[in-house]
Amino acid sequence: MQTLDIPQIDGLVKEFLKEEQVECPVTHHFAPDIYVREIFMPAGTVVIGHKHRTEHFNTILKGKCRVIIGEDIHELTAPCVFVSAAGAQKIVNVLEDTVWQTTHANPDNETDVDTLENRYVTKDVAITESQKEKLLK
Image (tube, rainbow, N blue to C red):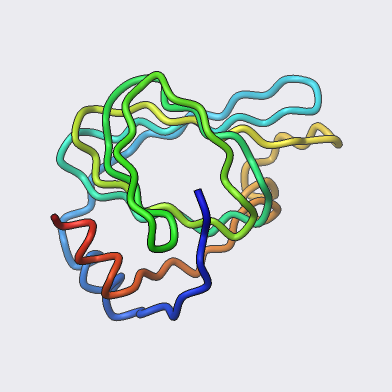
């Protein structure tokens, strides 16, 4: 999977944020030198992820979803493991209840979630018109 540099359209994110927000519980797992973030996403939701600063593993433990990364769209079914490049931002149309994990190197064994979020993601969430069209197909 390849992520493309594309212009961001803040208005589309604002449009999605006007919709009723769905709770997607997050669980954090720690082991020596590893941080795993796990999210449950219920069927029928659209999740706009943060842009990741680092290359990392993605594991789909349960479910099925349509995922846009850059301008590429993929239909993924559990079990599934893939690597995302640094700079990747995922937009997920959840087709079946999904459990998704991201795995990150954590060499200093940090456990403060705010610190880890600042380290691994940027919160400038935006999508393009093209991504929106693909997502809603």
